[in-house]
Image 1 (cartoon, helix red, strand yellow):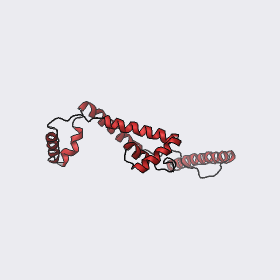
Image 2 (image 1 turned 30 degrees about the vertical axis):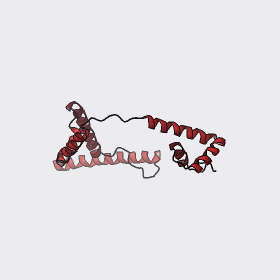
Image 3 (image 1 turned 180 degrees about the vertical axis):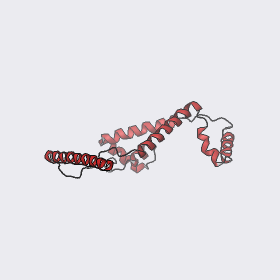
Image 4 (image 1 turned 45 degrees about the vertical axis):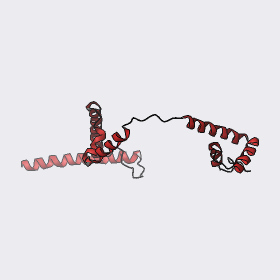
Length: 162
């Protein structure tokens, strides 16, 4: 017999523990378990699970359980769609709803403010390398233009005065 664990057939172990194997398969599996420690351990664990399930007893239900269950089902069927939507929120007290609402409002406002802000990251560079000499020459040219502008504006003031 091939090992059920090695051949990926654990259903045989479960069937053995549940007592659902025919006598031929059960005898072959018991002979295999004599040599295979892992199947023996797994069969013992399955037997423990089945015995725990057999020992478990469901709690007794009240006599009017069915009547109350069907009554609640009928009551739920008569609710409008709006009442069904709001129903899970009803047991929530105002004390719990207020902080949730305030948090949602703050998150919404923060999202709107962040959406309307300008770009947060600096503009992407064009890939040009600017040297210090170029910057100095540009600044000198701007100073010269500024002097030229101030000289031309003073000349225009004098020409209007005449």
